[in-house]
Length: 291
Image (cartoon, rainbow, N blue to C red; front, top):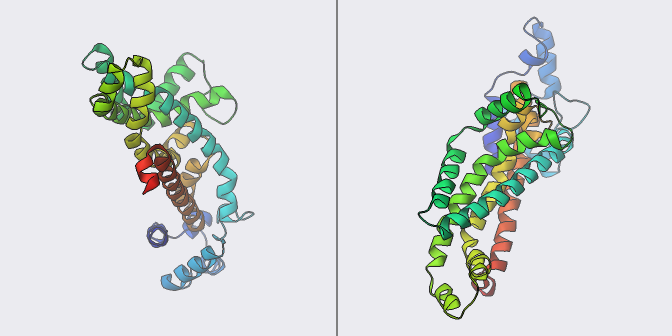
């Protein structure tokens, strides 16, 4: 987290002077200097970083330049529920499609089912999210009129953004589950279960999938974090009022404090998701739990 603060502080300061955005190019030099003093940008960078880090340790992430009525942290947490909602739906969609496709591809290896799952995984990892979102918007919203083009509202507003955000994760989960299932299906305990007369469905979904889930689960923490932090493109395309769109707006407006708050919150979510995955990993694998 400390390394993150150093990186985001340095990069955000390299984007330019925010007074050019908030005051305009016609503002007088005295007005610019007054704004820089008010924002604390007149001090040396080392001193600015020290002030920022000291306040951050106390839970104060500074004051947003674009939304001065709220602190930077307050703005982030106000927009966070919309992103969590979108990310949650896209993850459920990715797991609900990716896991069955991966299992089916492994069980029906070298068949049309396996080939179909490979094609879906390849397309999901190759097609850019922003292009997929724009094409879906053109087809289902503009041409067919089935779905709203953008915005935050009911279930129909969620469909295209969730598919766009979850498409890459479907591909990743499908490939991981398939490869893990192929290894598990060839193991000795699976052969023994079949010899004992255990039903094929029970062998696949109880014995194989639980053990095969260890590798995908390790990656799931990364998937969950990337889904949250990678929502910038999707939310911008669909004008979804979450932290992704807020991050885009804060970069464009050079709102240093808001950029720093967003990156710190995203980093914390990334670390927490990895921690919870480690806990669940120990639950699934008794060897880790006992050690």
